[in-house]
Image 1 (tube, rainbow, N blue to C red):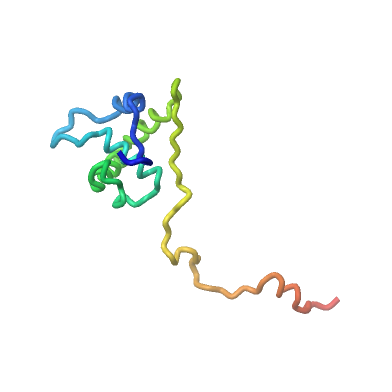
Image 2: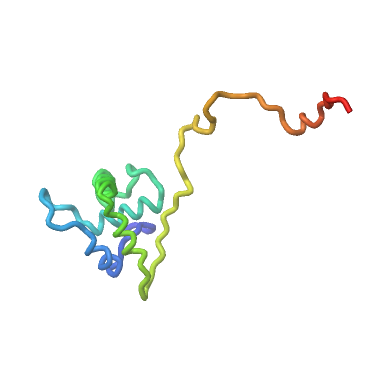
Length: 130
């Protein structure tokens, strides 16, 4: 295993397992523990899904599982179970300080307007009479 990858330990997995869907029709799911570890790793790192390490499985599987379960609101119970304090509580943090935006997203609606700086505004002679 590569260093720096997130893996759910046995106690964390025991907390999560009751919240996983069971009895679903269709093909058998891949190793849930590996996929969920990959999802948590990707959420922590903030990287693109395409850059998911191979140890977690195909990035499409990881993204599709995250996306489907997000639409069905399964993650709330899973993350709540992970965050529940216990005798060996582990702090997990999902950082959202880096937000992708289009390069033109800094401008507001309405086009550009030329505004005089405060320093220039004070230097200009007053136009009112005393």
